[in-house]
Image 1 (spheres, rainbow, N blue to C red):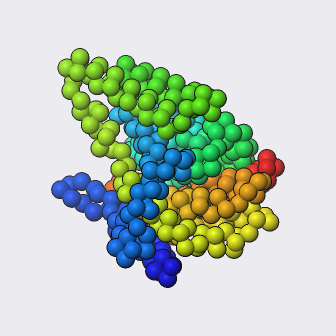
Image 2 (image 1 turned 45 degrees about the horizontal axis):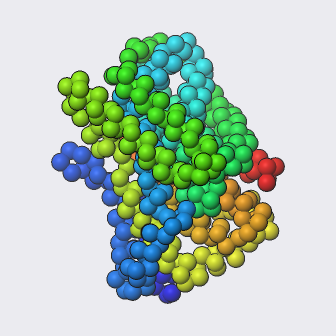
Image 3 (image 1 turned 90 degrees about the vertical axis):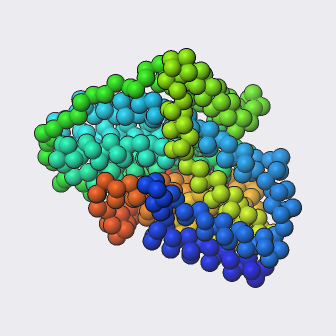
Length: 433
């Protein structure tokens, strides 16, 4: 128990240090993320010293329940690869360009439109994909239009991590927490729709106040509208995504596991796209690009954190944390604590930890704590860059595009928007619960 109590906080501290100093390295001209190595070392130490046995880890990984991390990873990666396929086929860039190209008279109109566009796309795809897709476009657009990119970049990041709460598939943290508690697709929407709406209104209002002076000018330049790389592939991807979401909505009634639905549509899409590409004599480079762009580092990251949580649970430390949080006011206590914890250990390991803590509650307290933790995991992503994997990768992309956004400046913007958004979302959640 002493080793678990020592290794867990040391792993969290080391993770923060790596993220702040060197989350990635350059290898033969390619950027390789290395932050996942920290929890992997922590998990390896616990296994080497016998604190938790390989048999216990294997039992957890093969358990026939919804908290099985392998099923959750299949669900997340399947949806992510469908979104990346659409990105590689030119869908997101074409949509963004087509919409923004028609709004070149007012910076505020452009700002509001960007917030709306990112919000809608995030709801039906994934916040990480939208952030990583739109960021280069915004940087190029702002440079060509000779405007400050910061308001638009912050707008994009906030919108993606606010509206990702609306559906289970919007964020891997939603997937982990909700599926671990056997929440259905429609059951999740019924609770999270109002808190997401409240948070969305609050975040957009605060963004407008923050950047109102910067958005007063006009735009003297525009961007040329680009056609999708291949309209047939775009249509194929959109149809698969739409049908997948429809089946997810009715998954509880059909008694189909969500991970299996997502995996089936991913396999169908890549198989049909591969046959189409080969028939046209174009090769499979687009599919290879999609696979290369997927965030594979999330696999060792989540599995390692799962081992740490198994050890914490084995020795009763998660129950101790749950007792500390209590059950008298779960919306506030779990909402605030998950929000802060996401910025100490990142929102994915936070979700792994909190899913175990929440499981110790029952009844309405369990429901309130669960959705409050979902809220904190999403909105905590834009309090500091440490809050989410997307934040870590996003700040690196900004550096590559010579956009200066220091940790302190991010924190000032993040605190100004995320705290009111969190308060609004928890108020909405209290009304629903």
